[in-house]
Amino acid sequence: MHYNFNKELPLFQLNIPTQLYAGKNESERIKDIISQFGKRVLVISMQDLSEMAERIRNYITTAEINTELILLENIEPTCSYIDKLKQQLKGNKIDAVIGIGGGTAIDTAKALAIALTHSDPIWLYTNLSNRPPLPLVNQTLPVIAIPTTSGTGTEVTPYAVLTNTETSQKGTIQQAEIYPKVAILDPELTKTQPPKLTAATGIDAFVHALESFINVSKFSPVAECTAREAMIIIYKVLPEVYKNLNNLEVRLEMSWASTLAGIAISHRGTTAIHAIAEPLGAITHIPHADAVAICTPPVLKHTWSKAIKKFALLYDIFEPFNRYEKTEAYKAEKIVELIITMFEKVNMVKKIKDYVETNDLTDKLLGDVIKYKFRPLAQHPVKFSKKELTLIISDIIE
Image (cartoon, rainbow, N blue to C red; front, side):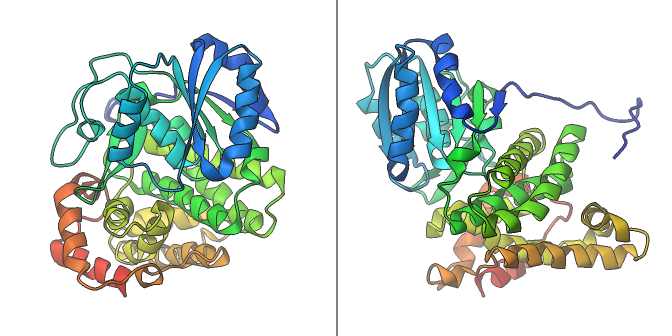
């Protein structure tokens, strides 16, 4: 894709402040990195990654760094839990926070980087469509991200997604201060992902790239380029890694694609799929990546016919050798089929009823999307009316 940079184009921004290391056994590098951040480090990981977390913790202690390890349950981060940890850790001198795991661990580490340096409840620092966040008034703790999944891209984003269990909402902290200072992509760590988690997180990464690419909110050549490359890699590699979980080469490709998608959403953001998926997850407690998979086909089916040029361009990316043979309308409709076929290859075509009862869900979900997620909705290439959103949500539920 070529850009004609001239005075008629709007300005754009580029911010990639994370030092990235990628390769087999690169997680061992942490012992050479960590000392620049201080002598006392908080390590956040998951219960089911305890052996891995202890191994990485041992690398850190060889550098004469004091560590405290917290192992989380396998749930998405909640504001009440962040505030509870803040009180437990009050008075501890902590110089940096390391997140080892998927979005739960790394987003928790990011949230604690704020919570441990600020006094207000963490929910007030989330950025909702209907209210701005509290400003950060103190220096936050540096964050180091060591992802074990290939999906969220949180290792290179300024985002931390949190659930408010009291209001059944999801909100996102959006602050440049929580960009990880360092991220380490080690395919050896991702081998622990079972097939379902490999598929789900891979689909989440794909949709991050897809939504960044179709997002109409602002001019961002970096988002389009990284999103494009991420989609191509995931479309090709995800079905392959799903069949061969121990292939480190394709594991690293997926990690890189997830990171590219993270860079894309950092510079442009998501659209209608995440605008519906996040409230859906908050209400039903369906895992985030699964909620994204549920919402993607219905949103795309209601979008392509009203954004034919953009979706035809997507087809050209996925099928470059056929790009001159079809009409734009054919290509726009066909790309939706190709994406759904990829979902089918990794068993990620899902319905809400596969997880929870759907009684009385439509009105609550519709209300939350309209009230709390109107900003990402406005970034979608189609401006859906309330009636159209109701139809989409009906398709998601059925």
